[in-house]
Length: 321
Image (tube, rainbow, N blue to C red; front, side):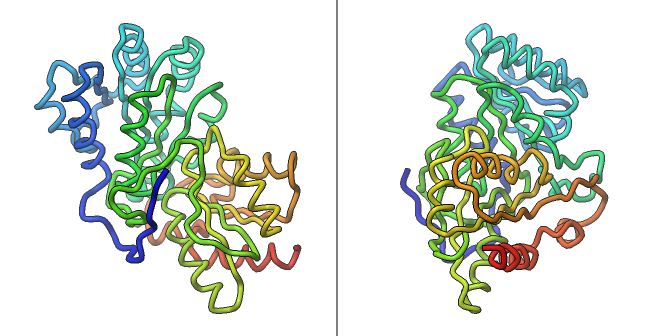
């Protein structure tokens, strides 16, 4: 693992879906085992270039997500490495039994891509807004759950999965991410990334909340509060060692995620803390609610997912320290 945190956090030029497609195309040229499946969202996911380049290795199964997972499992059983995509709730909630049995229980080698996580589903609204996808997928034994924060991390993680065996769930932003890491950075699946050091509290974040966590830390610093910021991009297996170390060194934890506070990052961190190093903890995330229609900026305010909400929780946890 070798990474540099950028000093200029701006929106990336390329959308994450385009980087995903380009990376798979590069890898597919080198490895004939790679195949792609989609549930009638080839255009939405920007995967038509892959389809044109590798028509015999591309399967658009239509709006049949459960069948798509079954097909992916079958392809894996023949030695292929399938990447199966749909929007987050349909890639997880709609076909969980197929994931659990046909992929997990059968010990096959499948990558499931769930796009538009949490409030990033925006105008697609509550039916397409996965607040529970990581929580659902945590129940699959031996699964690896990843949420890359920007395209630099995405490229590196996709490449790493090729040489690993098992079931992966990759929670993927489709549009432009905020750049967090400099080009060429590399990461280790299962290991957290420290973005900023601090002594008073640790903010553990994932996905689009990473940028909000860094904003919060910068504002807190003006008030004399030293906040460490940790990016946990692997929800399972989670980096217990880093969580315990942060609890020991800072004595207070705030988690921040674009997901329900139930069964996601907040729950996973709490499980580690209560069994190993109990310290005061607060959670920023969706407070057990359904999604709704609106622009992402509005939804982040609506569901209390902004850096201001993180600051509020930091001050509350410090009062309990």
